[in-house]
Structures are given as C-alpha cells and as structure tokens.
Length: 174
Image 1 (cartoon, rainbow, N blue to C red):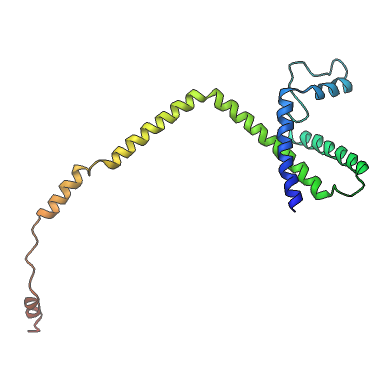
Image 2 (image 1 turned 90 degrees about the horizontal axis):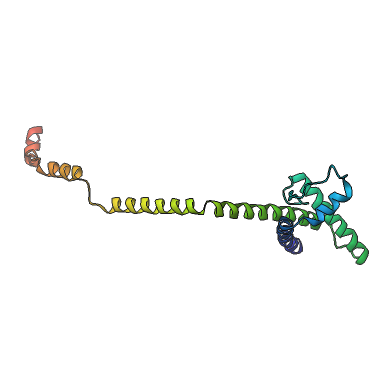
C-alpha cells in the first residue's frame, strides 16, 4: 500500500510535468503527426495540441496508458523481477491523469486571475467597504424606536395589586 501511494503521488507530479512541458512545446506530437498524416491532413503550425495538452479524456487515457505499457515492457526486459503489478499500473495511470487535469486547472486559473486581476481587486475593495459598513451598523447604538418602546413600558403604571390577605378574603377562605 505504501509503495502504491508513493507511486500515485509521483505519478500526479509526473502528469503535471508532462502537461506543463507539452503546453510550452509539442515537438514530439508534431513529429508523429508529420509521420502519420499526409501533407493536407497535418496540423497547422499555430495548433498547440499535444498528446495531453488540449486533448479529451479518452485520448489522454489512451496516450498515458500506452506510455506506461511501453515503460512496463522495457522494465520487464531490464529487471526480471515482477515489479509492475496491476495495482501499481492503475496508480500510475490514475495519478498521471489526475496530475494533467490538476495542471490544466492551475494554468486556467492563473490565466483567469491575470485577466481579471483589476476587477478582482475592485471586488475585494467593495467587499471590504461593505464589511466596514456592516461592522459600523453592529457597533451603532440601538435604534430610537427601541428606546421609546422601553420608555413606554417603564412609564405605564402598574395596577394596584391586591395583597395575599385580600385575595384569600375574596375567595372566602378567611
């Protein structure tokens, strides 16, 4: 279990590294694209698509699975010990996929923050001002309506209450 957890965390970091690397340069993907397709079907020079970058889930899953299967075959020939089990393979696959989506989320959020930094700054300032007004309202003394109501309650005279002796006489007990 410990080995699988370590491999999973390493795979998340590996996936983020792969995604980041492909976001800057997709030369390996371009090479395979030129190798596989005719001149008319090849990708444009402005296209930034890579094996993982700007791809759908299934395509990412296939590419990552293929990458790890090739790696496992090479490791099996180099090291005759059965190191690559199904659970480790699954941990690597899921961790790398998670790492690519995590890196994509980080890149997208940093772009959004950069684009909207001024509006976010204004939004934070407005929120701070509203918070200050709210705190001032809480600190303010009680409204005059409540003060007047308390005065009226205090000012109204209480009816003369009968003593206990008089109440017992009224009941006929004395």
